[in-house]
Image (cartoon, rainbow, N blue to C red; front, top):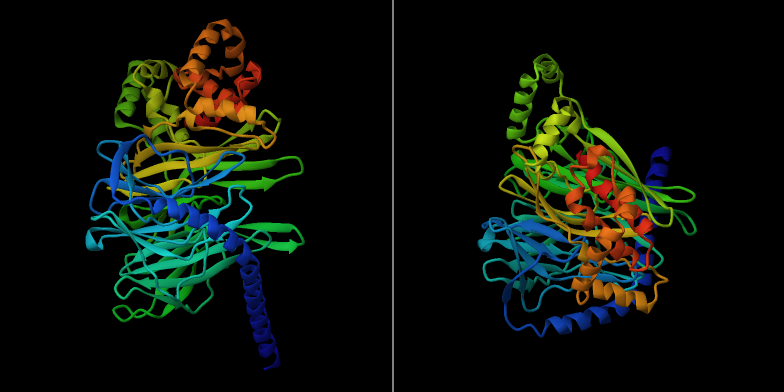
Length: 584
């Protein structure tokens, strides 16, 4: 009895400590939140001036991350809401609503009166009822300097038929948080985890809440069994039986004053609803031990549900701090989880069928059928990790890892075939999204769409607004629907003067034609100086030439007009390698 009571006391002590920490964070955050509430109120006053619904065609949304991208339940459309953007000096938060028309490959912006306040790292879930509804919960608002945070605990619904926002004001829901996960499960919204951060403290959650879509009430679930440790940014998915899967995530804890230790979680759990056909108000946690090829440890990965109810994850980053620099290993790989077999496996590109036929004919014409047969007879190879180092202007080294499945196809290729296919846009056929984290995913009709996100080169953060798609049934090739626009990229160093800020402003709009003209004039004069620095190895030459000036312009835009050409060329070279090397 004595030993048992001691264990019970330890458990209760840990619970009390966690409760104290949560209360402490709440108290310190209160003043910060009051300051930010005033700023949020100002933005809401501006939004209140919108009196009618206006939908207008527009170019692709500006670069952002931590937004939500959802597939419309009835139409061939994707819905983008919110997100954030950081330019090196200032943080921008959005509450814009964009609609992407899949068939027309076009964007439109929808201005709706009284939208939710600006936010990022929220969660959105789509349900078919009422002609389609988009539910949004939580997220965060940051001060322009990125030093203060306000965490929302509000619940909103966008009625897709009438295009109207409605705030659902009910009590008993989760506390304010971001980085949580939310899924629609039968007639409920299930919320798990997340974190709350103030200027000096933070707390991670592992609680579970259910919102009933019929009664509009919140319920805090109390599952039995041992569940996941507190975390944010995990994978959360529903099973056909109405159970919940949790995988991975990130959390940190303070090990001593001003020293935090981060944890990349790689465990997996099943939250099972007991009593099929009953009220299903009893839940139990079970730990899973999946087989197969599991994702490498990472944070910032993006998730979706693929065909056959297979959860998938894409991209992410694994950060390692060293004495002189931080190595950020960014990914662009896909992993699938088979619920029936409790097994992970990597998504491998098979390549276009027409390309395979070309290769086979080429092999036969060269009387190398035997070699080709050997390659086909080999068992499928697993994904291969390609490691790249990018050196920024200040000498900071960033290592990027990308897992690609190309080696399975490489034995069938020949240099002569590569040359023949170059004229048929072979480079376009083999392009893949660059390694990134915090991208937005959505699946519609078995096609995966990847929008935006970010990656880093040294101290610079590149926020993306490109759009890719891949048919998950075929897994043949990625398609580029929207290319990244270099004019949308800006990075302001903390020490930059107002004069330099004016230069960036010009690059965004007014002086664009003049800048392009100066590039063209200087191209011939400086060709000999630029090309040796920018030129990649022979295996990249089919990929780079048509976008060479694109990368030079992007590098110059980030480094400023006064940067030396060699440094501009060096950054252009590094960025081009980051984007294309994993696809060759």
